[in-house]
Length: 360
Ligand SMILES: *Cc1c(COP(=O)(O)O)cnc(C)c1O
Image 1 (cartoon, rainbow, N blue to C red):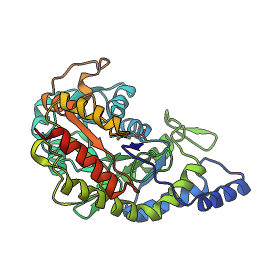
Image 2 (image 1 turned 90 degrees about the vertical axis):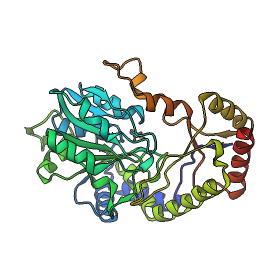
Image 3 (image 1 turned 90 degrees about the horizontal axis):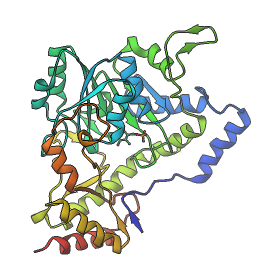
Image 4 (image 1 turned 45 degrees about the vertical axis):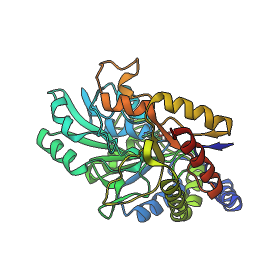
């Protein structure tokens, strides 16, 4: 079977060496030496001063909203994973969905201002598939209206925008280190801050909000990650460059072998160093998508509907918004298999099936 993704696993012996050391120390979690080492190596790799390794890419969104004390309405994108808008709901805020740009599939900055009300406190945008949002426009709008900006950069590990890690933009950025992402720690996530004055608060918020045994400062949560997860990160990090290179090659195979007459893919920003995290394609209609998934399934090829459904259409959203572009795109977009080890011949087979299916 060929799945949409296959988790990269580093050398088992190397991981076990870390496990032995953790065993010997008997110190399994709570800001231990392996975690500190991972954070130090991430700071260096990403050239970022302040980052916080956490349990997952969802809790970091919640901590970000909490740390910035956001209230009321948060402008966000309907074309993301449900974690983005669920985090807003968990923090008792209202997601206000602003439609996406049809070519980049990121939030359309030209529609943001119309959605701002006196209750708006922030913009939470996703760099969809690791492709940067229109950062300058978003920051300019935020500044003018005194709004905070959080980027859900779950897909953006290893992406550089204007020679800086894409994770370093906004008031806060979050990343996911889930096993399906380009860089992973089994489960995991990271919070990146550009505010030195938030350092102590972020540090405390991910670990219950108290300093030592006596000073209880915030209603913090348990968002800290373990030594075992940090060890996976340390084993993975030296491979990231090669992982991205391997993905880039498969990406270029798809680019050259797919017949683009009835197919398109989102436009990547011209000023990036990309991580090739996903290979999304847009089919002419949802009927085509369903037909294609059936044909591929017969060959045991399993792409993923990603993202589907458009988040503004979820039944539990407190306010209904219409986002025609996102609703349309989410019905006919799939992410094709893309992982280290996917062979040229398998990629070719996938392309042939798609080309045959779509040829008139
Ligand atoms: C994966 C993902 C998340 C959630 O990350 P977890 O680590 O699985 O909690 C959030 N947002 C986006 C856009 C994602 O793709």
